[in-house]
Image (cartoon, rainbow, N blue to C red):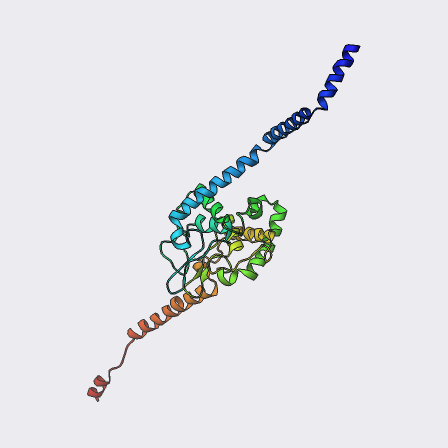
Amino acid sequence: MRLLNRSAGRLSRHRRGPIAGLVVLLLGLLMTGGLYAVFAPAQADSTDSQEELVKDGRELFLVGCAFCHGQNGEGVLTQDGTQYGPALTDVGAAAVDFQVGTGRMPMATPGSQAPRKEVVYTDAEIAALSAYVASLGTGPAIPDAELYDPDTLSSEEYDEYVVRGGQIFLANCTACHNFEGSGGAMPRGGYAPKIRGVDPKHIYEAMLTGPQSMDTFSDGNIPPDDKKAVIAYLNTLEEQPSYGGFTLGGLGPVSEGMIAWFVGMGGMLAFAIWGASHTTRTSRKKDGADA
């Protein structure tokens, strides 16, 4: 019993010593660091991968984009003060994903509008470019599939979304893109492209960022749910047959009127001329000689 009391007394004296507090502090730090390493390695790896993605994007940007948009995305002005390449500091990743993902960028030559063409970069390179431009400032991010994919809706929800999307489209989009999304001419050499058969993600990003002559429909103007409704409506246009036969470019009364004038009226005029040239005519000279 005395031996136990003596051992307890020694331990008690050691605990009260200055070294004991330091040892306890070190043990606490080691345990805290160990627990952090166990539960937070994914976050650290994610940060490192994002930094690496931004670094790769900058390298691609300097090679393919800096000539027009500046080495830091600040934009380039010509000597007469016109904009050669706009600034990209606040366009966000969604704008880059749309422009590069549809082949509109990089442009071969500056023009009034960037046409859609074959995509130059791979998906990984587009992701890197988007990450780098997103790091330059604020701007909308690339949307998740839940925001733009109508396939995530149930059949009842889909029908409701189609009706609502059609109303929104007719009120905000038909003036430029035509009532069936076939596109149309715009002032100053621009045009509204055909939006039928376009990836839903790119349609959502176009509404979100307003490329070229298009207005920007932010989430404050058209909420994400309404954007998905517009995409659902456009999907139904792909499934609708043309009951009138020839679509005539989907331009409605304009193309139909042109066909009526040039084909219908032109054909009637040609027939009238042909008929007049093949009818029997009297000859005044002959009639006068007989008299």
